[in-house]
Amino acid sequence: MYVELPHKLYYTIGEVADAFQVNASLIRFWEKEFEVIQPKKNKKGNRLFTPEDIENFKLIYHLVKEKGYTLEGAKTTLKTKPEETNATFELVSRLEKIKAELLKIKKELDE
Image (tube, rainbow, N blue to C red):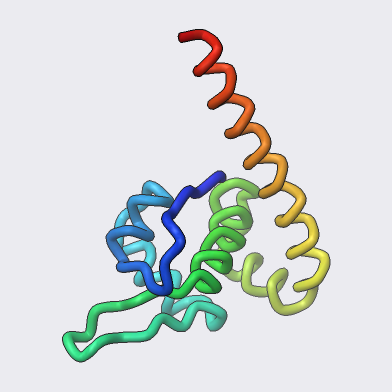
C-alpha cells in the first residue's frame, strides 16, 4: 500500500489512520500488539508517531492486510526474518511508488 504523508517529525493517530484508511482503534491495537511501534505521548496523552513508526506500520499493514498473515504470524516473521522481510517490503514499496507516479502522469496526460 502506497501511503503518502507530509514530511513531519511526528504524526497524530488521526493522520496515521487516515493515511492507512483504517480506524484509529486498529492503530492503537497494533501499538499494543507489536513491540516495534513505540509512539511518544504528549502531556495530554495523545500519541505522536515518528516516521520510523510509520515505516513499521507499513510493514505490519503489508504482512497482515495484504499478505494475509495472522497477528502471531506477522510477529514471528518480524522477529525471525527481519532483514528478509524488510528487503522484500522495500522492493514492494518502491514498485508501488513508481506505480503511483506513473498513474499520476497518465492522469495528467489524459486531461
